[in-house]
Length: 217
Image 1: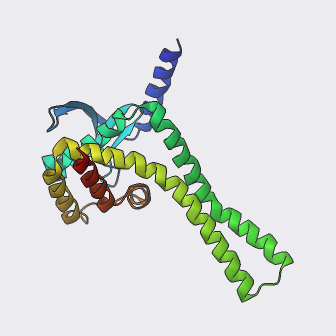
Image 2 (image 1 turned 60 degrees about the vertical axis):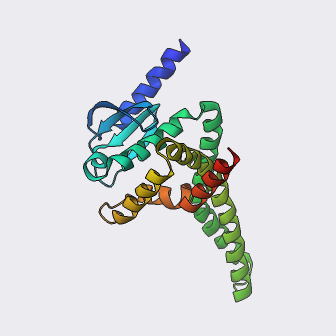
Image 3 (image 1 turned 180 degrees about the horizontal axis):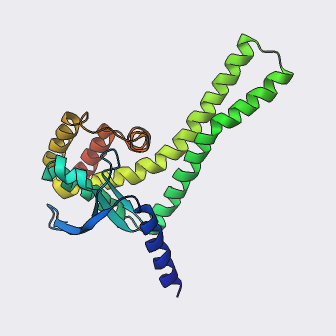
């Protein structure tokens, strides 16, 4: 009974999420490691996220297939498959921390503004007090941002390492070249830009971890 209710809730949430994203169909492909993966192909704005694992489904924007090589398609789909393979009991706590701390980080400037209002009402506004206030606020903001990015880096880094293992390092380097060459042909949404620059680990760090793990094998 509970499972049926949960499945219904997930399906309903997915249908609402895809309301303005016309579904083309359910497709599948065999990745270079011979694993077959199923995904929902949809039509949307080119600035939309190219692929996501959401509500227990991998969804892929049609734009990916029209403008990128098969190698890049494989890596992006493999990345989402990597998310799917993380056990829910491991992913859920990290996701909760990421969402909570991201909200705290976004609301923090409002708290700072309110604090500044009351602080400077009872304290003289001098260069030293203003500098100390800004310095303290910046340190707290950095701490909050770090607490939200580290769990996200773990989740996204694991998925990216999985993708590298699926296609191989040589193919991954070709993907990085294509991504660099085509970085200007598609305007990213604000959401995706924040995701890529804050909640994804730097590529050099992913490659460094992959190198260390490969040496241990």
